[in-house]
Image 1 (tube, rainbow, N blue to C red):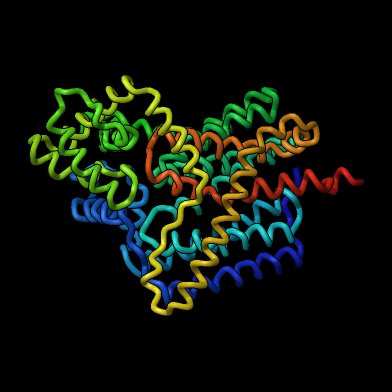
Image 2: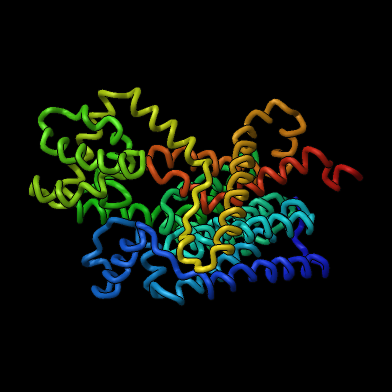
Length: 449
């Protein structure tokens, strides 16, 4: 573990990184219109519901409230755009600080922070009314706080309990905000708490227990409260009121095998699946186009239809496990494909569009290669030197576990938009692979002495 301090060179490199990172964001703000994706209308509707009803009285539960609250505070236009670009700059700084703390290498921190900030995929998410930018900032703030907690706990001679308590509480609050925007990151504080016990080899149990409780209690209480709200209001057990709609994406490719008693629903769904296949070549997300006609024909409301679709999909999964597990495997594979969202036609100049598209595809190819290297990291467990690297810096093992757990959970949660689910944590993959390779090739300074 390295004590955190910044000399003049480190300050200058941090400022230089922010200065370079601001250039594409200034360009985007004045030349690239704020983009709206398929999810944007839902977020705006929920933000308006919170504002017009002064709370959750008519909140439809289709999303967790984090990003709608963010939109409520910032609007859904130019100011939201500006704030997300600022969060992108702050994320650059967080990555710089995190890498510096882990390696004491200012140049490595500089290049890795720029690798995040100059990632056009990241920039275009910041320029969209989607939850990626805000969740990326909160994700890296959570990581930085986790690293500080591990550092404080490693200082066995330290009696600065008030600092540890304060950071643990802050971690709990920030991780709660992160999960409220991106529910997929809900396990992060629990994984962080688990590695506290791993780091201390289950010694100093008192300090480990109270630190862990402070880290996980805010999210635990909020999650139980939210799940209770969803269940009492919509009679659905989960983090949102989408019922079985998410589950349908897992079964869209073999929905024709649905039980005969649901023939009317099957016929309508298959009609829209044919249209979707003709348009995109994939059956994914057919359900969202089919819902209006399904509701009209079945006379079921949105939530009842969702429960019915969930029942059908559960039956399909039970009776067709091979097809289901094939889709699960595909969803996991898609997770590493580096999802990108941007509107090239909104850029008037053809040359600029061509240059950006070329850079974007090159960066995407590089990130896919890095993701492939990350997937191979578990095989490094056979190397004694690799095991020493993970033992020396518990954060590396924590970060690797977070990515792996996320990759597995996301493929069970949804089947379709999987490449987007890695976006907030993509730069963590780059960070981990780079630090891991650097430490494999070069001995740390403390080993060279």
